[in-house]
Image (cartoon, rainbow, N blue to C red):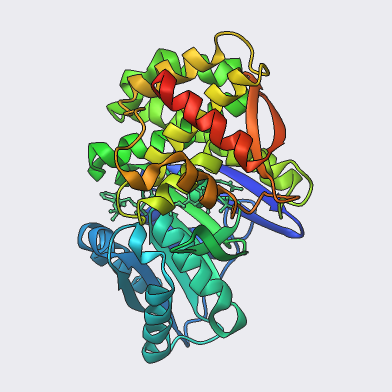
Length: 379
Ligand SMILES: NC(=O)c1ccc[n+]([C@@H]2O[C@H](COP(=O)([O-])OP(=O)(O)OC[C@H]3O[C@@H](n4cnc5c(N)ncnc54)[C@H](O)[C@@H]3O)[C@@H](O)[C@H]2O)c1
Ligand SMILES: O=C(O)C(=O)C[C@@H](O)[C@H](O)[C@H](O)COP(=O)(O)O
Ligand SMILES: [Zn+2]
């Protein structure tokens, strides 16, 4: 293992898996998987069946050959399933196609799926693995900043034209190996998008993480290895803490990770999963939801300004997207299909202070009135 690698074991329900973060961790993929805990995952992929390297077109072009060679060097037979890059691949059509590729490639119950990519590959690949032949093992090999969130916690699934992540299950990876050297090829828009979930984790955690981001924003955007690793490790720690206390989002704890997502997911859906990136939608959702929290009189003074200032420093455009599709009435119609909802009301998670949240269920009329007022203010 490289000297800089950090390993954090995550316990969810009865499952425990390591999240290993560091420059170059992929080079030790094979030995790491096979080693027993606490160093490794203790996962010895069967040599007698083919395994699946699941990735997207962009990541495949950059890293597919290298990762396949690493897996072959451990004596594993591997074939690739490569989906088009982008959110539109988190669809039923791509899922069906990918399962066909798995069947044609001869994947069996003992096959392990290695999901090499960002959140799209992790969510879709994880969902394929969780359902293929009623479930095969999978390993997350995240390659985006955003995936410090998506690769951890076991939510896998796909979108429906009517609702984001409408189909999915909870399924935990056998290991997460996060090689931060791969982040250097990310385009600036994807760097920024990933930072939305970092900001979310920071405001959920509190003052220390937020002031760290404020102090190190430029270094993080420039992918300075030390600052970036610390930003990601802190985010993973927040996520790990929440998901281990509420693995299946049944206890009213994990829902806090949906901060910014009630509005954000609706915007993504209304854009047909092709306009706003997930992080862009979440950034706007964080800003708009914090303005609603202010209107409700539950958000401590100054927090919203700090949140918006940090998002702006990371380069987010916090203006409401143009076009009739994003009319507040339409946003409310989509939010009414949010998974958190109860009693036909929209269940929001609002910040009340740094590191503090509160759930509120708002009727659709009230939600729409708040959205219209926030838009008038100029969000
Ligand atoms: N399961 C969860 O808990 C969870 C959490 C947060 C987000 N998500 C999901 O994650 C998805 C978004 O993930 P994302 O932002 O990583 O998007 P993504 O997977 O689409 O990756 C973003 C883009 O960057 C490219 N890319 C990936 N790695 C690269 C690299 N190292 N160098 C150059 N290009 C690279 C990809 O090909 C893609 O075009 C959304 O679908 C969201 O719903 C899931
Ligand atoms: O892990 C979680 O729980 C989250 O809510 C993390 C979110 O960042 C992520 O976008 C998640 O996929 C949203 O899940 P959903 O249940 O609201 O679809
Ligand atoms: Zn998210």
